Length: 313
Image (cartoon, rainbow, N blue to C red; front, side, top):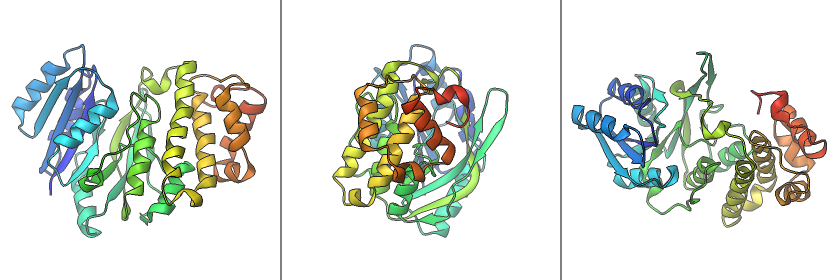
């Protein structure tokens, strides 16, 4: 059973060694790494050439910059594995990661998605551990839990059956914020069997220079526009009528995340849309209490909650 690991890379020369070494150290050996050099302007290509010559399980493609969504799409099309996963170049896997995933896969008869735990590693070497809060779950229940923020919507941290990608996904072009959630929601809708591997096997390295820490009005707007994309996608599925309150909760969470980048004006059309269509008791009740309070503070009192609590948003 081969696992394809897709790694989009833009100016990643400082991280390639640690990322690929974590794969070379895997106890399970039937894997391939597909590295997409997405128009890097540093020595990324040189490093990838070195590792592809070192181990033929590592393949790479170089092309003009088109963004992470298109890079991952190329990786999926080029993959030869039965299952695939996404790995950011500045992140790593624990040495037993693939072994644990294969064991889980065999135990539950080849599920569509395996969700696994991860370590959030901060610059000060502090580590915050996160695990899935279920062992096995249906697609509707999982959709609800993701939309209200009880389970993460990152594309990384999951193993996917490749057949989920047999039909084209609706890909948000050049979306910089929320593209993971937009694609992951579609993959959940295609799944029937979703299980968890409780071990923390993915190391998610935090960097202050990442897009998620960049502040601008434009990025704040894009964050909420990602919620629009997801709402419009779900509107055309059979799940929509069952998810209306959860979709409203998602809008509130995306709004809260947008305050990382900037606090949009009270009369901004996106803020008005959320206030008029999604700010209701049922949607507030489904998200954590403190986040619900932060939403109300930021919308009605124009206080940026991110400045109050840097780690809870």
